Length: 218
Image 1 (cartoon, one colour):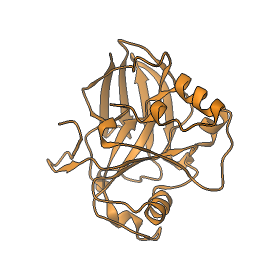
Image 2: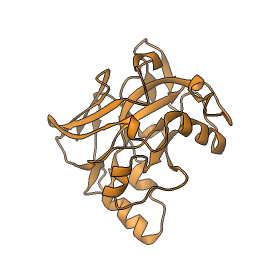
Image 3: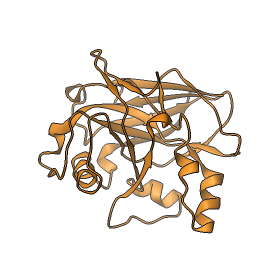
Image 4: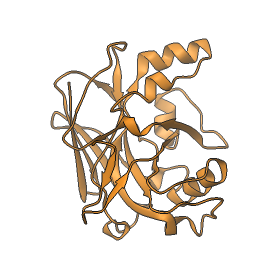
């Protein structure tokens, strides 16, 4: 079953709702022609979007332009409602590195028509995530390096210190709007450098050189 978060200590959590944050890195917002907004940009992927490290991810037949977006992923370990930023980290089960795959052509068409773009973001296997490490495995989640290699070449690199909204801020915000449940996760946004993937590409994402995600594009 692919809809599971597997901790490095052997703990397993069923995947819940996948909350994704847009425009959380200023340089990525610029490269996409967007502006930073006063409130977080949030969209949702279902559990079936999850894929484990080592998976092969197919490009949907209705798209000709699938893009990679590497991100820090925060997994929730306890239900939380209306939590403050100071309390937020008490509800974190662990961290991983993930890729938010986006069908850029489908998204652009939907945006131009003023329509929702779930089919561009929330398709099957569109949110692969590495195994999960405990929170004490990362020295400082607010100063953490993330990187994506495609076929051995670094195409994205960034640091969580550049996020417009921190992990505690995101957890607090989402817990007030949606509420969070054990097994939910948050994709915290991507740094600049997003780009197209094609069949046969091999992707390797890293979080602070502590954990790695490997994906092949079918």
